[in-house]
Length: 169
Image 1 (tube, rainbow, N blue to C red):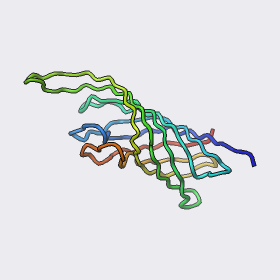
Image 2 (cartoon, rainbow, N blue to C red):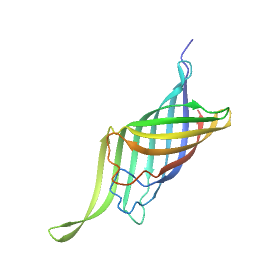
Image 3 (cartoon, rainbow, N blue to C red):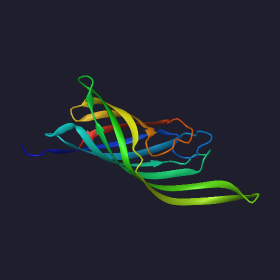
Image 4 (spheres, helix red, strand yellow):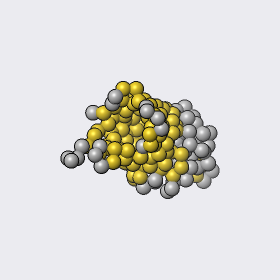
């Protein structure tokens, strides 16, 4: 048997509270992005590696936005004829952060503009569901960033949900 690598694309949108940043008001932010998933059909069709690019929008409560590129792994379990569930883990992230923060230094209010790039190996865990609507097309719901092995949730339980459409390229 020859190897058969499949490529799947997932454009998505959703909401997040950015659980791994200081977000004292637990504000909700919009997010959108896309993911490329690779599966090897003959060896392990349920296993997949993925590369995700997502952008989190700033909001009125907190001037923070980030563009993240991440690498991860997931394993699918078939629940019924058209429903799959999958735990996943993001094992590497590269974030391009743009934020404005207000701090007090020596009794003075100082406004700082932050433009930073961060690389992490966070091991962030989530769970998702694929609902098959076409032979090679799925509506996908993800609950992301539930917990991380190497990041602190800063006191806010994750509110990070996305909805998208996964299809084979």
